[in-house]
Length: 199
Image (cartoon, rainbow, N blue to C red; front, top):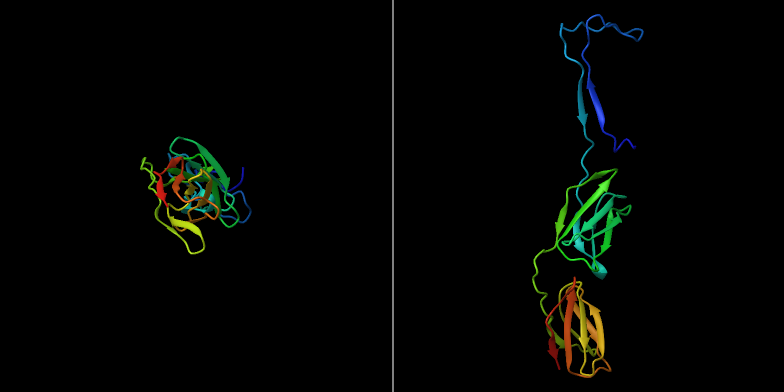
């Protein structure tokens, strides 16, 4: 067991009558009063592991943040599904959220000690909003606004499909060669928005 994970016992010693110093050159300790108590044992715990910080939704629908370098980061979703990773030397960590649903409970563990949990994301069943401000861009792409990290699916009148990811919070899809009469949805964490039509 490493010294960082060990629990230390600190003994507060009482000196008993008649005791003498065992080391040469040390004065004999003072006598204790009759009936002195037995040595007191105090347990001192190692410093608690700090929680992860700056939790955020990263690229490719990954959840990320900063933790203790080398720590095991455990993310548990609302259904009890778990995914784990290790914090890099920089402290940065990411886990894929595919198949998971918010809210997420996140802890990190170091040398057998676990931090307090951090909760991220709404746990309600709020319906994912549709995309909005759909428009034709000058370069021939179709664009609009959506939920950051969501996957936008564009289906044309002939059933051809193209997809993209919402970033910051815009999305664009190359619709060259597709037939006008588009149906657009966005999906995230197992939810799909109502469709929006655009011609």
